[in-house]
Image (spheres, rainbow, N blue to C red):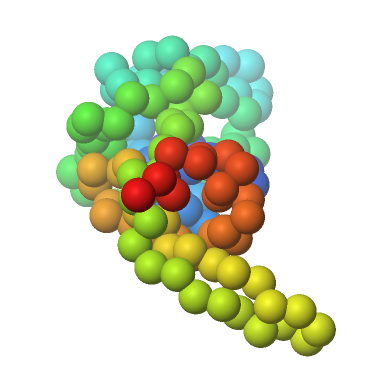
Length: 137
């Protein structure tokens, strides 16, 4: 069975963000059926903090004889809700974006994710207030 992982705004799960974040994780082995509408699944060691009983609405049947997919946590420290925090490492670039009636200064920020060397564009004024250490030269 595959387990549905609900996408939540601002939460990174399994190393992906936004549209590319997985909708389902698994497959996991079914250990037993609990009542008419719930199953108990065998979760890997990295996910032992999670409750292992799931309603049928959050499960998807796995078709075929596939090898189990193992989710590697690696060096990422997952929290009990299977999310993790990223911190900005450095400012890589800067630019000004012209909106309809104003200019907005943007900076390209490299984040601390060892699996994905990901950089995103953020507003410079917000980054200066939250992370002033990045702008010290």
